[in-house]
Amino acid sequence: MSPDPSQASETSLRKDAHLDLCATGDVAPVENSTLLECVKLLHCAMPELAVSQVSLATRLFGKTLAAPLLITGMTGGTERAGQVNRDLARAAEEAGVAFGVGSQRAMAENPSLVKSFAVRDVAPTTVVIGNIGLRQAAAMGLDALRRMTESIGADALALHLNPGQELTQPEGDRDFQGGYEVVTQLVRAYGDRLMVKETGCGLSAAVVRRLVDCGVRTIDVSGLGGTSWVRVEQLRATGVAAEVGAAFASWGIPTAAAVAAARQISGPGVTLIASGGLRTGLDVARAIALGADLGGMALPLFRAQQEGGASGVKVALQTILTTLRHALVLTGSKDLKEFQQKPKVVVGELKDWLRGT
Ligand SMILES: Cc1cc2nc3c(=O)[nH]c(=O)nc-3n(C[C@H](O)[C@H](O)[C@H](O)COP(=O)(O)O)c2cc1C
View 1 (cartoon, helix red, strand yellow):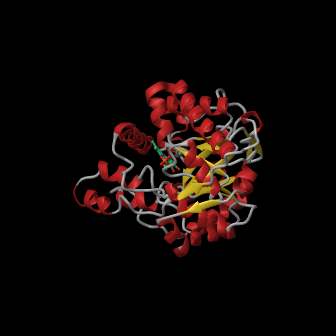
View 2 (cartoon, protein in one colour):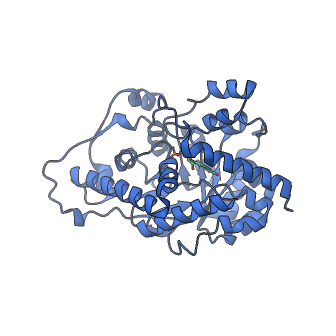
View 3 (cartoon, protein in one colour):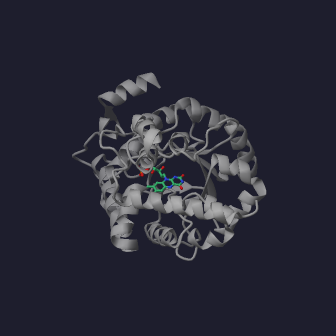
């Protein structure tokens, strides 16, 4: 694909506007819930464990992580975005968690932007994941995609789905046909190195089933309850687009409901990531109790970076992972496998979702 600098700068400008809105704006409406609060973990007053015996280790894309957390893809394409990526990646490497760059569309349009996505010098060993939207993937073709992934030394590619956001963007896509065909081609090219993610509206059981049938083995449900990309675009829009966006700012499947339904229909061969509104280590624990293999977070770690750079992210990760470790101790679990087998209580609205999905 030949670079188109004018489109490239438009893409970069839009990404910068997104960063501004996400840094301070009301992009995660409080009335939107993950429903993770409906999961009650059972306290064990006699854990019979030392904190040092608890392992949070897990595997992702053939590597071992110290803890089941992914900083999900956010940015790249400008100097400012490059600094965000480097700070996040550095902290991820130090904590032994995975890191994803944001959409590499700008870089595909203008390859000189690669440096704002390249983080291997600060994150040489941990899992690094590339990122592209479904429509752009279809337009680019497999060779260009492979080069894009290799140019940043990524372990895998995340394909993002965002029809709600596209519809709210006046300049966004309006044709969503042929998506599974694109996914099937990407599975042929990337095999187990492909991950499919939503961006805050969630994946239903039916979509997860079709993705698994296409051969996808890593799925991030990225559900409702955190950053709403419909909301972000609504805040950028005016007139009809803003009004229509407002109607859909709470659209989506709550993360807890999405991950529980996805686990029911996908076997142990599928790695499930729960993101969308996870804000604490306890949220990560609850998502894992529902069947996720890892939790994912975007907005809270971006905001930690904005406030304190890489060391701000480091402190945020320490807090999240210490909380998660304590959740394992207080349920008497020495590792994640044991933790998932512990009894839990599901209350309230999540019970309705579990009956209905
Ligand atoms: C500033 C920002 C930029 C994002 N850009 C992308 C992107 O380029 N590609 C993508 O797949 N998801 C992107 N996302 C979505 C996140 O990866 C995640 O799916 C979503 O924000 C829900 O997680 P959260 O509630 O923890 O923010 C972005 C999120 C944020 C906050």
